[in-house]
Length: 517
Image (cartoon, rainbow, N blue to C red; front, side, top):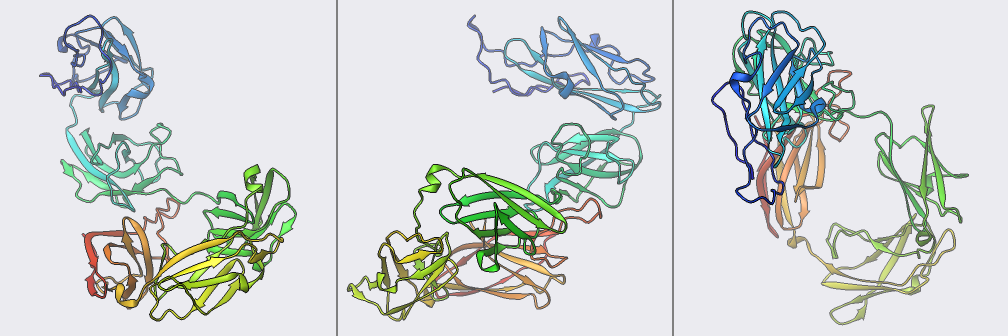
């Protein structure tokens, strides 16, 4: 692994990745980055009244250029530098006229590598077109607006106004999400951060971004104590997914509300009974295609039509009709129904082919069968039962397209209330509408929207460790909303509580959640 080395003169050379195979000539592997020779740098670093259009750096060894179009940056970005190589000397030039009385910093970030091991160098060269070097600094941390995690390798820019696309000054964030600006001119700037996906140093509408509504006045060295939060704006109306789940369902996912849309697959239109909305932007359509390989679907509404297509494989066409359980595990809580589902709508059921057994003594359990759409519920008296076994014979259910179900067997443990825990949440320190999310292993187990009382209860919890997240749901749409650049609305505030709440069987615990600083 390469080592970090600093040089005594003002040019900074930083060694970065170098994990390449050495030569076979023997001797120790070269782990030293090429060093610029201070006396041979022309013009000298921190030159005043700079009026040229080139800078040359001579190194202490033969070097190679590495993608100069991407690795050379001039800040402020008033010119597009290029580079040429002659033996040990790199010359950076530009054609544009630089602005008067301005301090510039030229970065060569990995532009220069040695020819053997690939050790590279970061050079920071400073000059001014005026008679002084600007010396103010500003630093800020960039974080993800939802996860609150630092964002590495993003751009933070200082802009003339809030609607500017190209920054006057820019800096790239490190692993801690920190962006450091040096050699700044005193003034008023708008601060924006973004994920520069296409590496053009311009904030694009679709890129993850964040901004300060109020400008920052830089007339001293400033370390901003408030992180800048970025998020990806909602993209325009788009279908995210269209897939077939054999033998009788199509699923459509979108980034917009599908609840008032019309659906069509090939020539098939759908009634309300043939549609299930899993969420407002996710829908299941019951339809068994004919023998075609490519199936097209159409989503229409608000004067627009989205056209989709998916491929039906030979394996899909041969998929039998099978049951699946809606339980997340093979445990049935007192608050849960014993429900099975199919990927096709149900036409008829032969209840004589359903057998429910008490696994303790193999005795039959009296039960009833209820069904709706594609779901079947098995209803029985659970008193004193610890485990049951359900056996369904082949052909017990007929789908609307005439297909018969395969045989199915499953064993379910019957749980009682005292095997679960309860958490009472007090969030009365909040005053705005909030979503309270209960998390386990980073996944949302349950969530609820609180508009006024700011107290809620999570019952029937499996013993384990839980955490909480609160979202200030300003528009009360029961989901987190990212930044809206058009309206200048910031992403909704998210509070993640890292303290673990341990839930035990037959226990009740109280949790108080307050806004975090």
